Length: 139
Figure 1 (tube, one colour):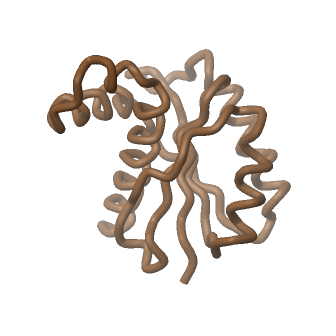
Figure 2 (figure 1 turned 90 degrees about the horizontal axis):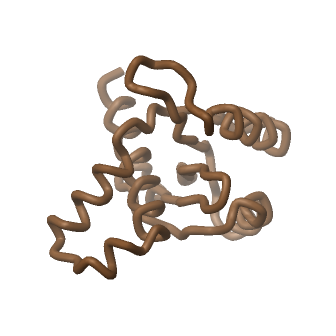
């Protein structure tokens, strides 16, 4: 069984998280610049077996698209084209940045650490992935 790779896509930075090979535990992986993302994914997939992708889909509270939604949809299409044999799921990412920030507070991280956007992006990807895993367990 391969891993599931989660992507919190942003126009500038992208947070990444991954499961263990048994697809039970979500862990933060890295934060990369958006322009380097596809190369990072290709390199990662040569080192580790990845079965599926989960991409956070940004939507407003009412379910309508955000300014970033079109960018994410475009990225999902590229990913599907690059990996036609792998499932690419989208998952609601509402509140993940707030949850990541609150998690950092709960962990006792100082203001300087909480200001690090890369950490927030990685944690957001981890929250997206964990939420996806939990939603699958109820099916």
